[in-house]
Every structure is written in C-alpha cells, then in structure tokens.
Length: 205
Image 1: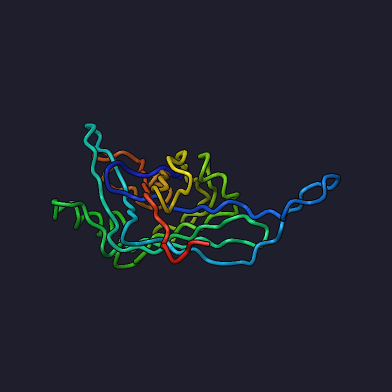
Image 2: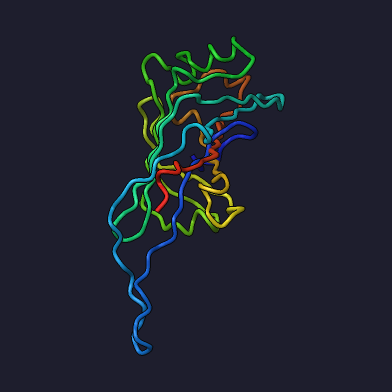
C-alpha cells in the first residue's frame, strides 16, 4: 500500500510498550537486554476505529468505515512487536450513503460476498516506532490478493500510546493491484486506510 489511512473515521491501529531491560548491571558491565515472555495485546474494538478513503476524479472524498474488525499485537521474545489486523467487508459502510455502501460491498470493490475480510500482517518492528513515528512493513491481503505494503504511524502525542492516546496510522494502496479496477473514470486508483487504535486495558503490563 504505502499504507496510510483516512480522515475523520478511521483506522490505525496499534501498539506499544517499551522494551524491557535488565536491572542496572555493575558499573563496568554493559546493560543487557532481557528476553520478554511472549504475550498478546488486544485491540480495544470499542475505542478504536478503522476506515478508508477514496477520492473521485473531481476531488470529492468518500470516507468509509469498518464497523467490525479485530486486531492484536504479538510481543515477541526479543521485545519486537508484530501486529495483525482483520477488517470484515460485509459490514463496511459509507455513513449516510446507502447506494455507495452497496457499491463498496459489491463485486466491483471489496466483493464482500467472495472475500469477507481484509487482513494486514506486519513484519516484526521495535515498539519505539509507535512512540516516534515511522513505517511498519507487512503484507496486505485484499480480495484474495497479497502484496507488501507499509503502514505509516504518526508520532505519538502521549507517553503511553495506545492507552492514553490513539495510535494513528495510515496506509495508501493502489486498488488496481488488488483487482479493484472498476470505475477508473470516476474514482482515483488510490485507497487510503486509516487506523486510530487503542489497546485493551487488560493488555497493560
């Protein structure tokens, strides 16, 4: 995608706990990284949002949302994180625009009847990416087609992103690469996914 997501509604998803370090070593020793116990952080689906944006050739912005989605972050033993997102296309909607909602669920766009969800699985990344901002590489699966894409995370606005503030990320993809090549005269080829992510309070260390 060069993954980047939409304006007011949407997604991004995600993450962040600082790396764990060993207790202070003797003055002559270098600090050692302590291996973490693998665990899973769950996305708070009530306080998080995932959506998308596509523009018409006339500059109009069409914004949609995924009312149903799932997300989790795997904390690996080396301290890196790995995010997994699943968005259900059968519930996708363009708020207030029933006809557009039908198009987005239909065979010319998400084709929800055949492909009931969109998934993004990231490569391992260091949690500092969420605090400082940066790219999270991974693989997007859309309409049964998979391509490497990048989710771009904005710099956090608080000390504990995901708990005290949203983790905001966006990813832009070319829909033609995923077989969504209808309406070329009316719609731009770019679809931007937007995630505003909060973690479940039960995920706190």
